[in-house]
Length: 212
Image (tube, rainbow, N blue to C red; front, side, top):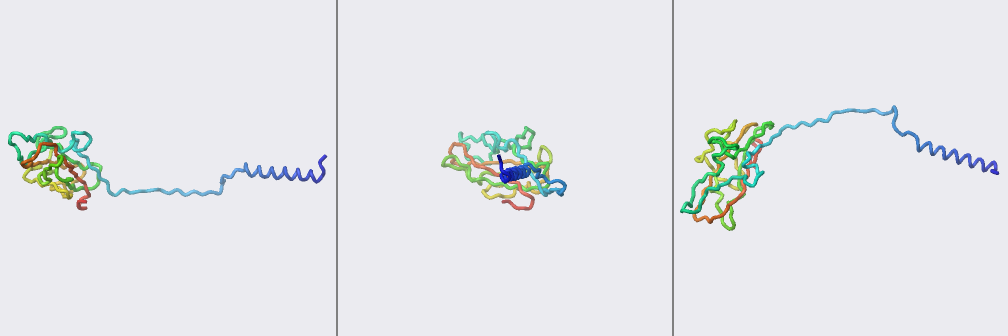
């Protein structure tokens, strides 16, 4: 039989356990005492530009690039002066001359005008032999449609260098306009047979910023 004191202890213990249980199951969510502020996030893109290279120079296929496949080292044809690249007279898709397979278009969604800069990695190299970088020349011409104006022209061609240099015509080019290119290569004597390669870089920059 539980004494009166023991009964009180049991009753007190039951009350404490009940209070703790109430605390554990109590809803702690805020009800009626919260306020909320809604504000807007806003970012303004001041300038956007992109360029679209022609298929021959976009680098997606092994046969892409500025290619000379018609330079013959037989029959005393070396040296060769200003041999035209294969794509100089071929559009992309094929179009009548003076369209070329080498073009870069300022994307129509751009909202700024662009300048184009060109450079090469160095001489064209095949093993231990080379064709000097100065022998690789180019010119450019703008067009608002598929076919450029009178050029690019050999008589206006400039040599590539390893320094980024503004191209002659592709300056202050607005959205939707293409800059077409032609390339020529002079092969000195004696030049060993082989496949000579380098890399050509054409960089688009905001008009007036200067070549990087």
